[in-house]
Image (cartoon, rainbow, N blue to C red; front, top):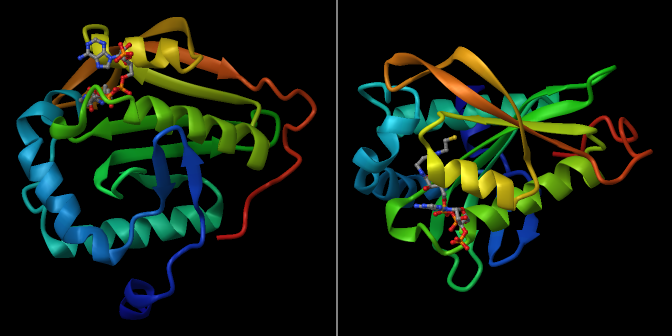
Length: 203
Ligand SMILES: CC(C)(COP(=O)(O)OP(=O)(O)OC[C@H]1O[C@@H](n2cnc3c(N)ncnc32)[C@H](O)[C@@H]1OP(=O)(O)O)[C@@H](O)C(=O)NCCC(=O)NCCS
């Protein structure tokens, strides 16, 4: 079963954005992903949960893909890799997670960019494209994002992408081994009336 999952046909999901293409991670991305994450480790680790010891192994990547596929099928999360449109280079990742339906119709956005690809507008393009997907395709009503107060790049990016600073949560997420306060951002759908129209997409 696990092997079948690993070699199962990939999801047909694709999202086009300004300068970027998003698609779900697949097994053949492993080498490029590992190289990018390894080269960016000291840049990313301060802003992410502690990387498990085997994080960059093929086995861990395989487990990651299985969890992604399960989450997508359940409609609770949509993880994507970000590719630069000009040359298809893998530049980072973005995930719409914690999707809650019913009276909430909301989800949370998280992202990372490989150090060599920063400041090219690629993550901004990805956040904008993912927001469109969330609001128009999935029919969500609201998106949330959170970052550590001194993460100026992320705060500025969220502002540019249409998120508004809404609050502050103490000891909100365990980042790099410590429970860190976070600034909370939100964005309400500019497409009123669509919320909840689509309870998922075909994966
Ligand atoms: C935050 C992060 C994702 C930004 O990715 P990026 O691809 O470089 O961002 P973009 O090029 O799309 O930048 C969009 C806007 O964000 C802001 N921004 C991005 N990097 C910035 C920096 N180093 N300093 C100040 N503002 C910055 C700017 O407003 C920028 O627009 P501009 O270049 O026209 O001024 C990236 O720095 C990263 O991965 N950091 C480490 C991990 C992390 O912080 N993850 C998010 C946790 S909440």
